[in-house]
Amino acid sequence: MTSCIEERIEPGEVDVDGRALTIRCYLYPLLTTPPRPLLKPDRKLAFEALTLLMRLDRELREVRVDWNQDRFRRLMRSRPRVIARLRRRWEILNPQPSIALGTLRRRYHANLTGYLNRHKG
Image (cartoon, rainbow, N blue to C red; front, side):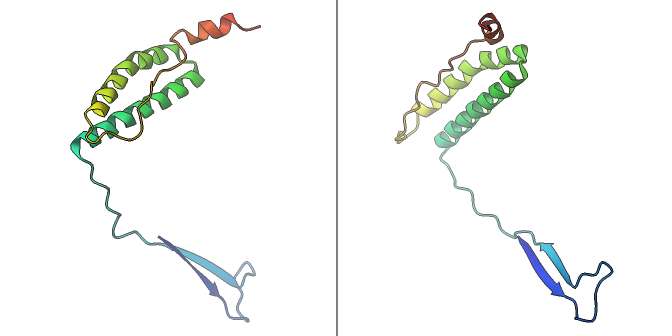
């Protein structure tokens, strides 16, 4: 939590820079943090699997920007295992979520640079 206080200097007193106003901000640490919602074990595992998939997809986007083909292939090889884990954990949820998981497919393949270079005009 941050608190800022305006301090006015008396009319006859002016600081070295010719200013008559000082603003001081103080940072106070929060004494309590809001409680985290507790998840059932099956939902916690599904949440972790979904988080892993989202992190992997973010890494894939970064790797595509860097054109690092070796890392791209390694991440794409691990993606089916991550999806299988997520599907397994999603199916055992009780009650089932109201949102379907979807296909989770990617539209590009491991040889992306060869494909793009071949179609450059």
